[in-house]
Length: 122
Image 1 (tube, one colour):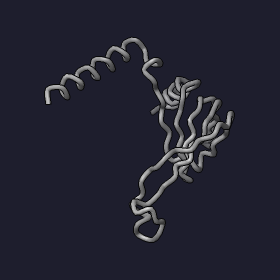
Image 2: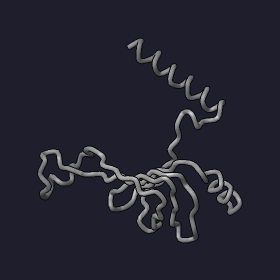
Image 3: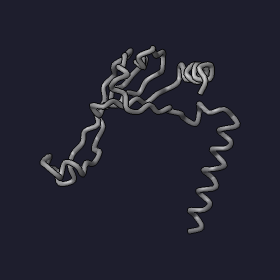
Protein backbone atom coordinates (compact mmCIF):
# COMPACT_ATOMS: atom_id res chain seq x y z
CA UNK A 1 0.00 0.00 0.00
CA UNK A 2 1.39 3.38 -0.97
CA UNK A 3 1.73 6.17 1.57
CA UNK A 4 -1.12 8.19 0.03
CA UNK A 5 -3.41 5.14 0.10
CA UNK A 6 -2.46 4.42 3.72
CA UNK A 7 -3.25 8.01 4.72
CA UNK A 8 -6.62 7.82 2.95
CA UNK A 9 -7.40 4.51 4.68
CA UNK A 10 -6.60 5.90 8.15
CA UNK A 11 -8.48 9.13 7.39
CA UNK A 12 -11.59 7.13 6.48
CA UNK A 13 -11.44 5.41 9.90
CA UNK A 14 -11.56 8.70 11.83
CA UNK A 15 -14.70 8.92 13.93
CA UNK A 16 -15.58 5.24 13.48
CA UNK A 17 -15.88 2.71 16.30
CA UNK A 18 -12.80 0.54 16.76
CA UNK A 19 -12.30 -2.51 18.92
CA UNK A 20 -8.66 -2.65 20.06
CA UNK A 21 -7.31 -5.74 21.85
CA UNK A 22 -4.10 -5.48 23.87
CA UNK A 23 -1.53 -8.05 24.93
CA UNK A 24 -2.81 -8.04 28.53
CA UNK A 25 -6.20 -9.43 27.33
CA UNK A 26 -8.07 -6.15 27.58
CA UNK A 27 -10.31 -4.86 24.83
CA UNK A 28 -11.15 -1.21 24.25
CA UNK A 29 -14.19 -0.09 22.29
CA UNK A 30 -14.28 3.58 21.34
CA UNK A 31 -14.36 6.21 18.64
CA UNK A 32 -11.07 6.52 16.69
CA UNK A 33 -9.61 10.02 17.01
CA UNK A 34 -5.96 9.81 15.95
CA UNK A 35 -2.73 7.84 15.77
CA UNK A 36 0.96 8.72 15.60
CA UNK A 37 4.24 7.42 14.16
CA UNK A 38 4.61 4.99 17.09
CA UNK A 39 1.21 3.41 16.30
CA UNK A 40 -0.34 4.71 19.52
CA UNK A 41 -4.11 5.06 19.16
CA UNK A 42 -6.40 7.64 20.74
CA UNK A 43 -10.02 6.59 21.30
CA UNK A 44 -12.86 8.75 22.65
CA UNK A 45 -15.99 7.60 24.50
CA UNK A 46 -14.14 4.40 25.31
CA UNK A 47 -15.19 1.36 27.29
CA UNK A 48 -12.59 -1.05 28.61
CA UNK A 49 -13.51 -4.73 28.74
CA UNK A 50 -11.47 -7.18 30.76
CA UNK A 51 -11.50 -10.62 29.25
CA UNK A 52 -11.44 -13.06 32.18
CA UNK A 53 -10.03 -16.39 31.16
CA UNK A 54 -10.92 -19.50 33.13
CA UNK A 55 -9.89 -23.08 32.47
CA UNK A 56 -12.63 -25.56 31.54
CA UNK A 57 -12.27 -27.35 34.86
CA UNK A 58 -12.43 -24.10 36.82
CA UNK A 59 -8.86 -24.52 38.06
CA UNK A 60 -5.97 -22.37 36.90
CA UNK A 61 -3.14 -24.85 37.03
CA UNK A 62 -0.58 -26.22 34.60
CA UNK A 63 -1.84 -27.75 31.38
CA UNK A 64 -5.49 -27.06 32.10
CA UNK A 65 -4.83 -23.32 31.89
CA UNK A 66 -4.09 -23.80 28.18
CA UNK A 67 -7.72 -24.81 27.51
CA UNK A 68 -9.21 -21.43 28.32
CA UNK A 69 -12.79 -20.38 27.83
CA UNK A 70 -14.07 -16.85 27.65
CA UNK A 71 -16.53 -16.04 30.44
CA UNK A 72 -18.44 -12.87 31.34
CA UNK A 73 -17.02 -9.56 30.16
CA UNK A 74 -16.67 -6.87 32.79
CA UNK A 75 -16.46 -3.29 31.60
CA UNK A 76 -15.91 0.26 32.74
CA UNK A 77 -16.21 3.62 31.04
CA UNK A 78 -12.87 5.40 30.54
CA UNK A 79 -13.66 8.26 28.16
CA UNK A 80 -10.60 9.48 26.23
CA UNK A 81 -7.69 7.00 26.21
CA UNK A 82 -4.31 6.54 24.58
CA UNK A 83 -3.44 2.91 23.84
CA UNK A 84 0.31 2.35 23.39
CA UNK A 85 1.04 0.79 20.01
CA UNK A 86 3.53 -1.69 21.48
CA UNK A 87 0.70 -3.45 23.34
CA UNK A 88 -1.86 -3.58 20.51
CA UNK A 89 -2.38 -7.06 19.08
CA UNK A 90 -5.63 -6.57 17.13
CA UNK A 91 -7.69 -3.69 15.73
CA UNK A 92 -11.18 -4.31 14.41
CA UNK A 93 -13.67 -1.94 12.83
CA UNK A 94 -16.99 -2.12 14.65
CA UNK A 95 -19.74 -1.60 12.07
CA UNK A 96 -23.44 -1.61 12.77
CA UNK A 97 -26.14 -2.02 10.14
CA UNK A 98 -27.18 1.62 10.68
CA UNK A 99 -23.67 2.80 9.77
CA UNK A 100 -23.51 1.01 6.43
CA UNK A 101 -24.11 2.83 3.16
CA UNK A 102 -27.44 2.06 1.50
CA UNK A 103 -25.72 -0.20 -1.06
CA UNK A 104 -23.86 -2.19 1.62
CA UNK A 105 -27.01 -2.34 3.75
CA UNK A 106 -29.01 -3.84 0.84
CA UNK A 107 -26.20 -6.33 0.17
CA UNK A 108 -26.14 -7.31 3.86
CA UNK A 109 -29.92 -7.75 3.97
CA UNK A 110 -29.83 -9.96 0.84
CA UNK A 111 -27.11 -12.11 2.39
CA UNK A 112 -29.01 -12.49 5.66
CA UNK A 113 -32.29 -13.35 3.93
CA UNK A 114 -30.47 -15.86 1.71
CA UNK A 115 -29.00 -17.61 4.78
CA UNK A 116 -32.39 -17.65 6.50
CA UNK A 117 -33.94 -19.34 3.45
CA UNK A 118 -31.19 -21.97 3.38
CA UNK A 119 -31.55 -22.72 7.12
CA UNK A 120 -35.35 -23.02 6.88
CA UNK A 121 -35.01 -25.66 4.12
CA UNK A 122 -32.90 -27.90 6.39
